[in-house]
Structure formats: structure tokens, C-alpha cells
Image (cartoon, rainbow, N blue to C red; front, side, top):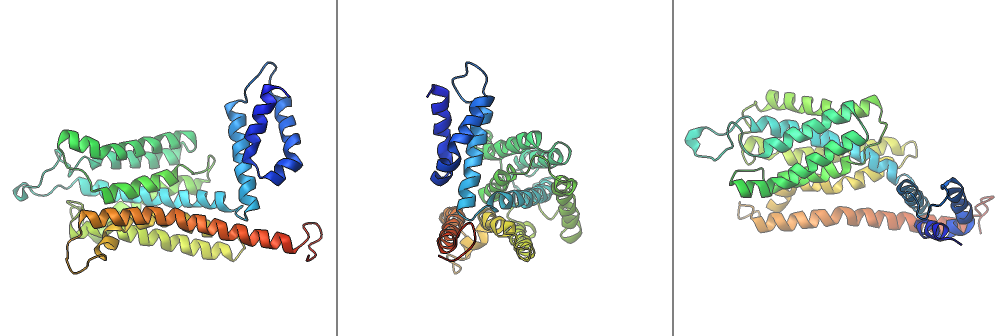
Amino acid sequence: MNDLERRYLRLLGAYPADYRRSRGAEIVGTYLEMAGPGRHWPSPADAADLVRGGLRQRLRAAGAADLAPGVRLAALLAMVTASALAGIWGLAELHPAPAEWGVPHVGPFVSLGVVAWAAWLLAAVATAVAPGRVARLVITLALLVTLALPLAAAALDAPRPPLYVLLPQVALGLLGLALPDRPSAATRLAPLLAAFLAVAATVVLIGSAAGAGYERAATAAVGPTAGALLLLVAALLAAGLAMGRDARGDWALVTLLTPAGLLAVPDLAAGIDPQRGVVTFAALAATTVVVTLAGPAVLLLTLLVRSRQTSTTSHQSCPTCGAQS
């Protein structure tokens, strides 16, 4: 056994043990045949392909073969929501409070947040015109800009959006990175269309200048409302797909629990001590931590339940003829 074969075998550890025993030699043999002469290490593409294949087999063995397609569906809903929010907050940034109020602002804008919302709208455009690698690069840029805002605001002594506005955008953007490389035309255009519709709805319903500040009454409900709509749409899709025995919607709904919860953090935190009437930073921080941990915990619990159900079913029936054991 040479070094290259040994390293391919290590990568094969991504696959379940049963699959490695039955197909491992064949898989490694195929990669060795395709490898060029004199190679001592698997190429990055081969390594990524093996790991992806192993994860797919592990999900299939756990009864979660629809998880990856479900995450891609969640990615679409997340990018639609992120783009809509970028449109709403970008519009609000164009209308700072009147000078006599004495509220700090950044030139003609409410805060430095205008840079982040512009980046997210650019990501929506990139998704429409250059899906795949280019779109992911622009989404990554928008994520980095959003994450850098608190530091930039502190360094420049300038106002910025609250963290309970920025953190959900980061969570939505991270999911958006899972968009498929070759989406349909509807998938490509959905985020950009959502941004346009959100801006139009904001102008019609609350007025273009009603969002002067992120804590004002006209804009305070934007996050919780977006989170509720996100979960509602995901639940409706899950119900519709379940009628065709398609579990993608279920996985999308579970995956979206964290970003939807983060969008509702101010309302959830207000419920900790409703008598005080003021939401403290400690309440916001505690609620954020709980919501951030709760979503992955529910996903992990769902995976464990599905894995146990699949294991029970496989022990009860013959995999060849279906006869009960």
C-alpha cells in the first residue's frame, strides 16, 4: 500500500463503516486509477468529493437523505428574507431623524448600516445574474461587512444598527451560502424580487420616512414580522411537500428556526420581565444565546430520532425482500 492509497483510505472514513466494508475498495481503486502518475496526495477536489459523498451516505443511513435538499430550500428562503430586510433597512437608512432631535447620524444616512444593506442588495443582484461561485463570494463579502460594522462603528464613533438587527442577517446569510450552483430562473430572481417588493410594501404601508431609526415604532416590528412570515412560509411548504412524501420542507423548517428566532429576539426578551417595560442588554444577550443554541439542538434531536426510526425499520424487515424479521 503506497502513501496515496493510505491517504484515500483515511478520507474514506467519512463514509459509514458498513458502506466502507462493502464499497471501500472499489471507491479507492477508482480514485487511484484517475490519479496522475507520481501523485502522493489526493487532490483537493477528490478530497472534497469523498467527504461530500461520505456525508450523503451517513445522512441516508440516518434516514435524513432529504436534509441536504432541505437546507438548499432553507437557503433560498433565507436569502429572500435577507434581501427583503436589506431593502427595508436600506430605505430606513435614507431618512435620518430631524436635526433638532439631536440624534447622531452618518452624513445623509441613519448609520453605517447603509454599507451593509447595500452589500446585501448587491448579493441579491449577484444571485440573479451570476449564481454559484460569484454569488457566494458576494454573499461572503456582505457577511464580512456586516460582521465588521460593530468594530467600525466603535473605531469611528459612529452609529450602527443594533446587534439584534445584524445577527439575524448574518444567520440568514450563512444559510444563503448553501444556494445551489445551478438554480432555476425563479430561484435566481426571488431574492432581488423580494427586495423590490419589500421596499414597495414599506412605502405603501408605513411611509418611506417612517423608519428613521431602528428602535422607532414603525420599524420595531420588522424583524419579528419577518421571522414569523419566514416560519409560516416554511411550514406551508413543508405541509405541501409532505403530501408527496417529500421531507425537504420539514428539514428546511427546522433549519430556519435559528434565524427566525434571532429576528424575534427583542420580543422574546421583552417576555422575560414584562413588568419593567424596558428590555435590558442582559435579557437580549441571554435570549440570543438560547435561540442560537435551540435551533441546532432541535436539528440534532430530529436527526437522532430519524436515525433511530431508520435503524428500527432496518432491523424489522429484510433489505432484499422486505419480509419482517
